[in-house]
Image (cartoon, rainbow over all chains, first blue to last red; front, top):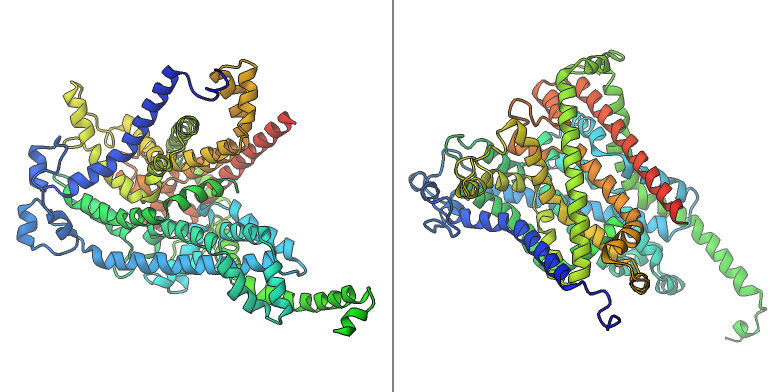
Length: 298
Length: 311
């Protein structure tokens, strides 16, 4: 009997455990639901019925408002404040910033990881060790000097200024991919080499495609990080032509009137900012959950 | 064909060795080309700024004119700066609350998840807050905790309590920011601890069970010690992250009310981009950096000590 029920919690404990998990799930999900519920509400009507669990006077207004699709009169009628955003252009900026930065970061890391795992050359381990120390340097020390550097280069308010500092070098990505290459059998590559293929050709035609799994993982994680980045864009982008969504949302919040903020509009904007990541999670969820576990075991 | 068959046994290795040497000469050149972008990025955007950051902390630098060497002046000023000590106090309070809550919640959640369900769905739900930005988290919680219309205060009032100024009351603001941060990050740390639990062989628990150990005893005697390396790692990550908190504070309180939530990173930002005192801001960054290095090394040592315990 005891053998059959091994590793099963006693009943009371099991009920408590399930209760605990239920509470965790509710606390995790409720803010998402509340964002959704508020984003479909009429901002004036919210005043009269703040406790309603369903949207108050269901409307698409807040979304139209933050996308610049609603006339000023309609916006005022639904309790939109003077503060407005047109998220579409910020959305474009976020895509450019996160897209290019992620691609460069993963691609250059793949090149370096290949050199650190497959090729044999003098000084390999020394240089890898030096690059690896960068994992120990918290961003706090390099943030201000990097701003000064970007300013001196005249790259404030440009995508280059946003992207450059992180695009070329990522210690974690190099480490992650190097581990992958070291764990792979080199048989196919050796066969290709005997056939006379060059190293570079082998890298692009064989090694890179074989690494598509870890490359996808790193790209997804990198894209999430850049998409959500706030501090660096706050320092280098003061112009809406390059500001990403995170900045637009923060500015929208801070410019809302204290007396009666446009909460419905804010939640619609927040939801639009979060939605691409949630959709991406729908596609890569299992991969993200599993690779996060690994990222901790570094 | 026949030459291969009749070739002496020693020949193929020698030839492939020559080939390998030739390949290695080519390897070195190719390797340097492949690592060039990374090395360049490391030198220009990590190593150089780190050194320049140290240099700037010993200067008076107002961005518009060139930095001027002032020796230890910034650090001496720092010693007498009440606002700095205040922000250090706020930061430490925030770190302790955040780290303690994160560790408790993520260990409890991971252990219970591991025991009760193997559902990927629940793990996916738990990780959701990790996917959104700090800005979104701060905006949503600002709304939920609003004094007049926020659902949390409405619920409190419905239960007969007074409403609470979670983000506007001096006593509440730091714990509130800590809770928002834990909501945002505990899912991630839970998944890390969960991954650690999966590496523990289940036979260990069966042996414990045969010895008649209770659930609590097995958790204390088996789970915790075996998890120590990963817990130490999660601890270091959480401490370093919490010390550098910025986004959530900047978006939801800007350090207020009356500096009650002015964390170090917020003060550094104010000094640099509000008052353009880059020298002073760099000095504070350096102090924070040294503190982080010391704390990380202390934690690593603790981790190593615990490893030798087991052997």
